[in-house]
Length: 483
Ligand code: LFR
Image (cartoon, rainbow, N blue to C red; front, top):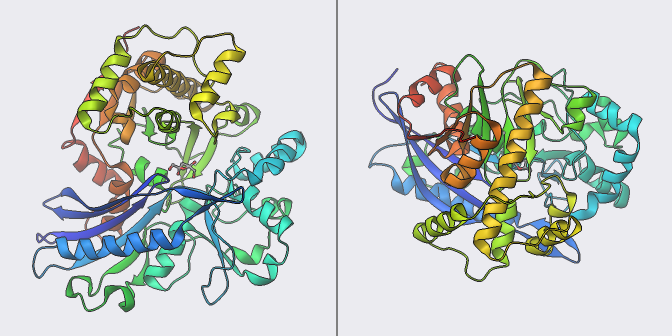
């Protein structure tokens, strides 16, 4: 192990913001410097939702230049890796040209397919048994099924399907590969193997030739293309590494978990992902009813998790209030005001599909309360309280389902992501779950992304070793259940 610092960069794209982070590995310690951050959003065109893929690529390139500028004089960037939100993809031809616009997963075009599969019990059970992924509106399977059914000429035009991190890896390195963790979000991977599920591809009528066998995370894809590196000496010899492409897999890898498996993980951002790590999937009727999604780690193990709607509820509600907080201070004041309120007697049903992509989140929450004859909150603090308590209960429900179905007992909930800074949410989760929440000040996805590169470059022996080294140094805050 060399003693000179090693520099690695993470491109971490989220559905509402993206960042490029320079990681420095020195003396068994990882330090992060965010060199570029930008907002991300999808746009609606004639009733359909699309990502601005060219805009994202522009931001990625800007970020890479910022990384090069941030390096000490004479230093070189060893590698770069990309992770993004799950399920979204591009369709390409062999020359690498996009042959279909890039849809955003909240587009409602999958609703008829969602209902069809939901209403056909035998098919739904078969797909769950084959893939371990429940029937959710954003699945790649439903998205591709809709495209092939309504735009059949696409099967002549497209020859490849890549997920978003794979596509950016292709733009960076020139090599087209599908990384395993991101592929596992599609509802098209065999839950017992490491390749595509033929029954699932056939069910959704998708051409198998679009899907190449996924590669494991840690695969070195090649050198950063010279068209991107330009003549910057800092980017000479920079490798592109296929890290776990799914941001949630990265965030879970970053958890400073105890090796005995007694920690439940919560990656809290736009979505709340509650889950754990294991060698076996959690399957069966009850698992499907609890919406357990058997997503995979970059090396093929399992991350059974439940996707609770998350801070999307709050992000949406804030759009309906002009007085949204802008600074950390204003946020703290809002959380304090929400804490001072009495606990709401009736909580939001967080699995209500009407909350997925409403025109107005506030109106959607009010409508749900009205149906149950409950008055809506009076002000923003009231909504914050309602949302945090409701999410806390959603997290606790997921914990109980995992304990029952996987035969585990969890001792702690480790929490990373933006929500880990929200003490009301952390406390509500601890109270509802009845176990302590340990909240880390950690850019989870970026750290997991960087860890995968350090392991691939052989600077760190294993993920277990990385976690052990990290755990001792992290800033953490513990919330003990009050009830
Ligand atoms: C979080 C996430 C979730 C996935 C959702 C949609 O960013 O990746 O894991 O279910 O986005 O892709």
